[in-house]
Amino acid sequence: MKFAVKAWSSGGGRSGLLQLGGCPLDTPAVLLSTRKGLPFFLSPDLLSSLPSPHSRLLHLCPLHFFEGLSLQTVSSMGGLHKLLSLPDHHYLSVLRDSIDCVPDPSATNKFGASFDTPYGRFLVKPADYVDMISSMKPNIWATLADEVPNTVSAKRNKTSVERTLRWLDECIALSPVGCGAIFGSIVGGDSVEERRRCAQDVANRSLSGYWIGGFGLGENTENLAALMNAVTECLPDEKPRLVSGLGTPEEILEGVAAGVDLFNSAYIYDLTLRGFALIFPAESIKADLAKFVSVGSGGDRTKINLRETGFRKDITALVENCRCYTCCNHTKAYIHHLLNVKELLAHILLEIHNTHHYLGFFASIREAIREGQFEELRRQFLDKTDCVSE
Image (cartoon, rainbow, N blue to C red; front, side, top):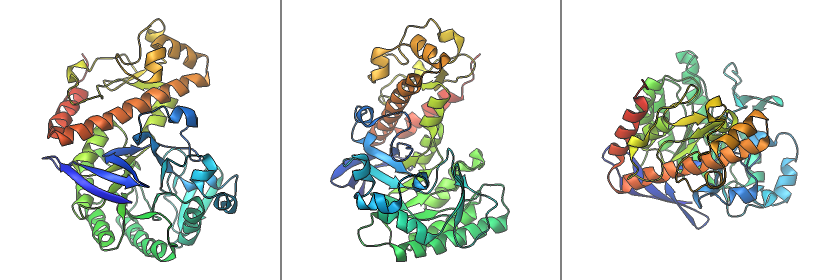
């Protein structure tokens, strides 16, 4: 793995070039959420129809493989790329699933991280996790972390930082040669001081990049910028930063402004499952942000709820001039009908559009940074989404 920063914005955001297996990827970029290595409603052929190469960047949660094929079987097949026949895709492993599998905040076991999953509670020790990584062979993996929500005490939060640092050293020591690029985990909950302390210690290790955890677990959104900046200010510029738990367009813009390069969240899955479609201008920095529209109940100026009865006879595309398969071939009325009759095709079509639209949003951010217009894009976007419809 290689990474280089190519441009900076006046507000701190940056664009870079990440090389994985000879494939160049511009950043900021998003990892597509997966279930056992594949997006939730997209088959491999549909995945390949999305804008490339950024649709090839996939999040992997090893917890999904506790049931089914054994780690020995996955390893004997040559790892996850061979198992899923996706040799040109890139997996980034983070032992966290913001949909089902979240850290158990009551866990106090000092030997490993405890996770509540659909298959029960699992205790994962550093040695267990490294065994998973050795078998699955992801391109990048983040070390084991003790994530806690903002509701824990200051003492518990401090303990989580100390455990995460100890597990970081254990993961590095146990990691076999050729086991992918290692990202050091950074936690600290809702405390600027603890996040800064953790980031400073992690930055002293020899790592390929950094994973910033502990977001999306109930932190105060008003402190988001301060928490992010406390971390990124301590990290070297020449290495990439990945964050989990930020997903809305507003959160992404805050993360980019803080200097984050890669994002991982279940935002697209959550929207798709609830019947929402993204509609905000996303294709270019030259897009007319005045196109933000007022929508009915259940939506806002970034998305619409296709379950609303107002779309029953709407024969327009989800987004005018969108080039995704869904918008080129189907209407709001048709997807509304599919949702009402509970057809899986509704979620397939929505995930195609939402993923395509989200990737376009990241492309517009990269373009804005290169053109020196990121702060203007961010300000205009936040101003438009903060407007309340009369």
